[in-house]
Amino acid sequence: MAKTAYGDLLTAQRAYFLAGHTTHDINGKIFRTNALADLKDALKKYEPQLVEALYMDLGKSEYEAYTTEIIPVQQELEEAFRHGGGWLKSKKLLPNKLTMHGAGRVQYDPKGCVLIISPWNYPVQLTLVPLIAAILAGNVCVVKPSELAPKTATVLAEMINATFAENYIHVVTGGPDVAKLLTAEPFDHIFFTGSPAVGKQIMHAAAEHLASVTLELGGKCPCIVTEHANIYRAAKAIAWGKTLNAGQTCVAPDYVLVAEAQKEAFMSSLVFAIREMYGENPIQSDDWGRIVNRQHFDRLNAYIEPHRNTTRLFFGGQTNEQQLKIAPTILTNVELNDPVMQEEIFGPIITVLTFDKVSNAVRFINSRPTPLAAYLFNEGGEVNTMVSRKLRCGGMCINDTMTHMLHPGLPFGGVGMSGVGRYHGEAGFKEFSNQRAIFRAVSQPNQLRYPPYSDAKLLKLKQMFKL
Image (cartoon, rainbow, N blue to C red):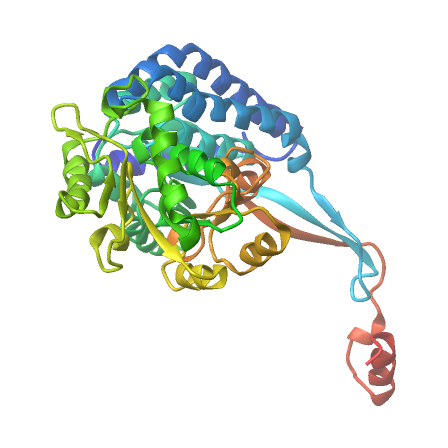
């Protein structure tokens, strides 16, 4: 599809949107509900093809395909069906002293023409969850799935394009060149999930048209394991979060700060937890996925190579170049300027460092780019409260990893370098909506507001507001 065709597609979608098919009257509500029902039916129909494609692209087991891709989408759909009608309603506001002569309300209008650019690591979930929010908010959409998960992108394109009219929702496939052409078009909102580097390019392109953006990025997500943590529970949760999808998760634990007194117990528990889940040779486990491509395999292997045959490589490090598999790997005592501590790992490698005081661990994390998520393991309320208040991050779990992104009622997103905006559930509906203020006067306003002004009027004004 040439650049002119992308412009033609957007023009057709804008005309469809302006015709009012998705507006907020009763017909618009029914239209959106029907669209979500069609998407739900399509997901069920294409479920086997999606599961197979996820295995071909990422080596995901059938179990992991359901738990990390299919089921989260179904949960998001159920949340929309259960509560979406309430989200659509205008929110009435009580008047204040300046607005006693009328009534105010907040009306949720669709932003209009939306572009969704999704990533390769969770190509089904991270395409369809934002699409659900965009549909419920009443937008028209162009969707570009990642070319790095080509089989899944093909199935998604077939599924969505067979379900919806092109001038309503349409999938466009291709690589970075296609994304660049699409972002040059005057969309009203762009939703992007990916790296901070590409996120900056998306924001720059959106600025040309003053389009709003949602950027779901990443960062080095830390774990703090205090001296009062349940060590095995912490190790098991961190091992699960680090190894899910072979570590290719934006909210996966990236490094661990553990209390010095607990380091030895934590390290042995972490190894035990990995073996408990994947056996003595994780690469051969049927539940172990692969790295998405050779480029990322080489990038991850470069983090390990300098530490081979040293005490810094505590566990793992095995690779299978033909299958693009890397075993769960634990590094320790690495320098802070080591590349593995400077860049988001996005793979099955984790580094373990120590701290003396929890406040210093928080200070260390806050001195680095803000992560998308952070994880605290501690038994006791005061430390939990202190860390949750002082630690800067997009989202947080206490005594678990990644679960905060599984509940549609919890807004998900980053801050600073880890992203802009929130979605999931009602937060996603609002992210794709224009929250429009409407005020209707029903009587004469207070005459104090009109000139000519006088000392007497000023006195009354001050008395009214107790100034």
